[in-house]
Structure formats: structure tokens, C-alpha cells
Image (cartoon, rainbow over all chains, first blue to last red):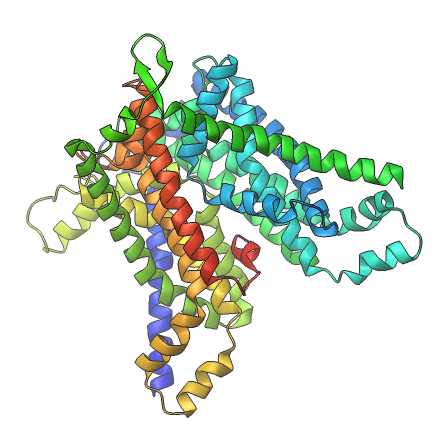
Length: 259
Length: 286
């Protein structure tokens, strides 16, 4: 009796929280197909709002900017972050704890603080706000996530694998290339995908280091959202949501299949 | 062997230089700017002053700090109250469904929180779906003003940050030895006693991590009050945003950020003190 009451409460609670998390976003997706500008009443399905988006050349440009930025930011972050993670795992060097701590602190640091720090840095060295300032900023906040994703993957493996390679005469570089890298590859890919999502979703840091010449999608959405709820924006947010869901699902299955 | 150590030093130098410049140095600059004098034409002039810090005690600023704290504490407490049982129940689910349920939890963690804030806007607006439902149920007779209130800001924060509370808690519950709970029950502990004496102490690291992941963003995600709050919903984050982008008073903006970083430092210390034995904190995110 008690057990069944317990599981009733459990299911109710789980269901309630999932409903809370998904209801608003599903409402937005649902109304992005509604054939009316103002009313909440369902007036039949339409793709009008998506066509409007499709024809908005400014939006395409912002999307293109975001994609280019996300591509390069995640690439650089993955290169730096994966090497750092493999080193953190494999070597006991001076400052190892410090590096680990710094990466942890960076994850907890509010984006806002990072944003203004970089704004001050860039204006001090006279870097124009635009693509390059955004790229440097995005790489900085992506690195910690890559390091942690790759590092926690390596920790899961039996360290004897790497020691065996060394005992069999593999040089350090060979161990990295032939043993550690292939094993960590799924995590590296996930790090790449997640950095890409972080980059194309970021508002706070970009808000400070973006310039007028290089408009990116999240800032565009932000300025549109300030004007209120509109069907075109419902459609745009639905598109962004669906894209990120695909990326997250892909990373989920990449990590699952191998482990 | 020579080649090996080159490889090691190169990859370590790369990350140290990067983080050294863009994280450490840039933060030291914030600290530096907070002690400089504000100047309308040059933004800052290199003259030492405490005035930005004394300005923090201005009644208006104190009021904003107070309000930020109340909002952040309310949001954090709500996330904990909803998230703690949720994480516990989730850890007890049959293994077959766990992977799927985890996926559905990770999706909101990674999807744009701006998009999700916009979704909250769409729900709460005067002619939005929540008012329509409440009206048709006869619970209210005229639409409530939900959007552009402090309540909306809190709802938006909880909605956005709940996954950040749940994930560290869940990771903690997963590592919990179920037998301890059974032992408590066998020894005659009441449910409350088990919760208070066993469950909560054992999940302390998760609780601290969750609080940290929710509390700081609650004060700093300025776009949530910008979109959902009214004219008076100014949080610490909005204050910094204003000082930097509109008032152009960088020293004061920096001083507030230093204060914020100080709060973060204290929270980190508390967290590290309480999680020394659990070296698994990197498992928190995925």
C-alpha cells in the first residue's frame, strides 16, 4: 500500500516537472503554425510565419554569422580543450590542481562577468568589436565544457590501457595518438557539438563583445523578443529549439552507444 | 623523449596562455578598472579612487542588491523544493526508462535559455494561454497581469534554471548507497528522520553544487528581467548591463562585478569544504 502510494507520488512529481519544462516551449511551437496574427484561437495550420522568416534576408545573414562563429569557436575550443583534458588526465605536472580549479571556476563564473571582462580587455588593446572579439570570447567559454566532457570520459576508462601501451614501448605521442585519442573521440565529438550549441545560443557574453557589423542570431532574437510575442518569432524560436534538440540528441546517443 | 615533452609543454602552454589572457588577465582588468575614476568622455581616467565602492552603499543600489537577493533566494529555494524530490524520484526510476528521461532533462539544459524565456513570455502574456485557461475554468473573472511583474521574473528564472539544480543533485543521488536508507528503515527511523539524518547529509555536495549553479545566474541573467519583468524589476545583472552599455560608468559596473565575484568565491569555498570526498564533480554536466 505504502509502496504504491509512493510510486504514485513519484510519477506525479516526475510528470509535473516534465510538463512544466516542456509546456511553454510546445505552446510556442504549436502557435507558430496558427493562421492568425493576434488570437490564441486555433485558426487552422499555416506555414506563413515560416515563409516570412525564409524571406527575411537580415535573419539569414545573422544565422550565417552565428553558424560561422559557432563552427570556428567550437573547433578552436575543441582543439585546445581536448589537449588540455588529455594532459590533465595523463600527467602530474605543477599547477595541475590550479588548472583544474580554474576550469571549474570558469564554469561557475557568471557569463556576465566574463562578458564585461572581455569588453574591458578588448577595448584596452583596441580590438574592434566584431567577428574576432566574438570568436575569442566564445572559445573562452566553450573550453571548460570541452575539458570536462573529455576528461570525464577518460576517467571512465581503465588506466591500465594506457599503461600497457607505454610498457609495450609506445612513446607518449603514440599513446596520445593511437590509444587516448580514439578512446576519447566520442567525447571530443560531443564537446564539439555542445560548444557549437553554447556558441549559437549565447546571449550574455555576446551582448557585450558584439559589434554592429557582425549581427548574430541570439542577439537578433533578443531585440525582437523585447518588442513582444509575435508569430514570426514563435516560428524562429521553434526552429532554433528544434536545431538544438537535434544536436543534444545526437550527442546523447554518441556517448551512449560507445559506453 | 625530447619530442614528447615538447608536445606536452606545447599543449599545456596553449591552454594556460589562453585562460591566462582571456580569463585571469581580463578579470584583473575588471578589478583594476573598479578602482579608477569615471570620466564621461574617456570612460575611465587612470587615477586611483575608492569612490566606486563607496557608491555601492548608495540607498538605490542597496535596494537593488536587496531585491536581487530576495529574487535569487526565492528562485533558488523554489528550484531546490521542486528539484530535490524530482532528482530523487528520477534516480529511482527503472533503468530502462532512465536514459530517455535523462535525455529529456538534458535538452532544456542545453537549449537556448533565451528561447525558453520567450516561451514563458508567450505563456504569461495578458491574452496568453495561462489566462485563457484560468478564465475558461472560471477561476478568475478578468485576465491577470502576469507578464512584466516580479512574479514573472521568478517564474522565468525557475523555469530556466531548474535543470541546473536537478543535474548535480541527480548525480549525487545516483552515487548514493540505497542500503543506507534500508538500514535506517530497519532500525526504525521515521521517514522524516531518514530524510533529515541520512538523505540530506549524504547529498550535501549535490545541494551546494545545485545552489551555486542556480543562485549566481539568478542574479545575473539580465535578459530574463529585461523580457519578463516590469520597469522596476532591476536585478544585479541589469545594473551591470546598464552601467556598461548605457550609463558608460565602467568603474561602478566593475565594482559591482567584483562584489559578485566575491559572493561566488564564498560560495565556492563553502562548496569545496563540503565536497572534499566526492571527486566526481565533473560528472555533473552530462
